[in-house]
Image 1 (tube, helix red, strand yellow):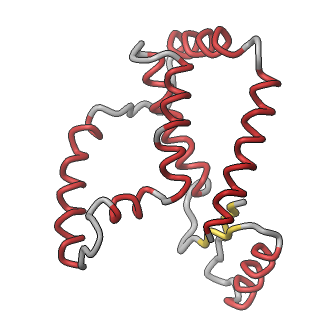
Image 2: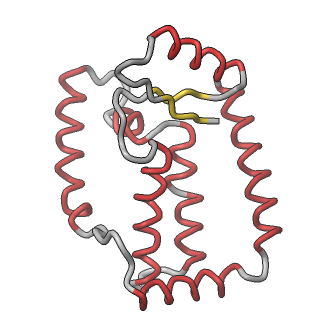
Length: 167
């Protein structure tokens, strides 16, 4: 349901308002960017997460199935109800004031530096890694792509309906 809206410098503000209005009427959630960036918000986040998922498989840290389960039952589920920034704020605890949040977020960002240092930084997989990944995905899912697709789609719809009930 999320749709990026990127008003340009010459875009009439009323046009952007109308686009947001009609997207909401179509049960979409407009994500209004403050400036143009390569790609889009959803695509960029998906690319970053998938790169790390690929790295875990290619380096042998986890299987394709384990990475997919970890994402499905971890960040994907967790972030479905509150995005990463809101989750960070919520971790500060109830009643945290602005100063408390600043301290908490600064500590959290500092604590993330070590894990970030170990994340994948490549922009292109070499041929051997590409082949290893493709073979691992084919071994994991070649037998069930259509049934998995139907289950994933049904699950996504059920999750969206549950989130709408919380609004």
